[in-house]
Image (cartoon, rainbow, N blue to C red; front, top):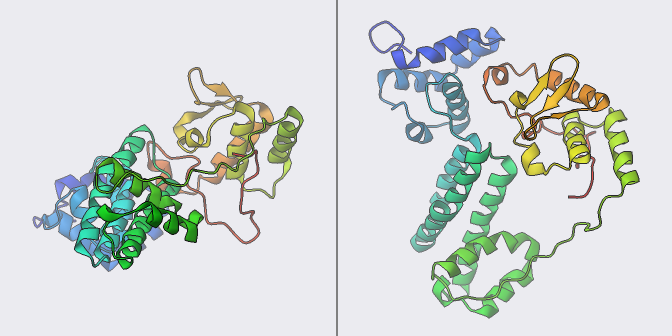
Length: 324
């Protein structure tokens, strides 16, 4: 991080500070010896790589850049931006580069920039994006590209699309191709294709209210079954106790949880909500299980429930709890 004067470049001094304060110095030293990390830090110090998000977005390998970007945001060198949003932008650049047809590539870029990115940025302003949100957005782009190629094979451009094309496209594989509907609606709204009918959404979830005895049985399992992941137990308990939507639960951070040794309080709203003792114990156990994440401890806002660990073979595929 020498700027050429024998000293650390002043803009990077906060990064040095946070590296010295973190636990596990051996792992930090190993990371600093990585040739890709060395190259990035030297470029930032010398000024050949501008110290901006846009400049880092152009660098590789992306995993190394992503971790370095997180450190730069944690130390205050760079303003905080949503991590999932940046990862999606990188994915989008790589995806568009694989599309050979220029008109298709331009149309998808307009759709991503003027529709998807506006929507994602609005959500990111309210709280950190989850991987499921950006994964669905990726599916929309992938299926939109597949539709354009499929339509071209039928000898038509998007402006010549007919109702028979829409029906045939969805008939072949409705579940897989449903994400393309966001793109199709956008094309209709912006006048890029005729206004046609899309298959209606099919709601398959249980519409019956959850009976009290079933809710208590689920809560009992959440509190007592140690074979279930702590993360799923905590999330399910908040749903079962306070009827919180999952979209709000995944935005909780450790700053939203207060434990004075006697009572655990969760900032679900104003006023905050105290957790009854059996649930409080599960929450305490979950917070303790995260304490080995040294970097996350340094962050001012650490997402408490939105990023699941890798699932092992003996863990269930779905968390316990009520229907959606």
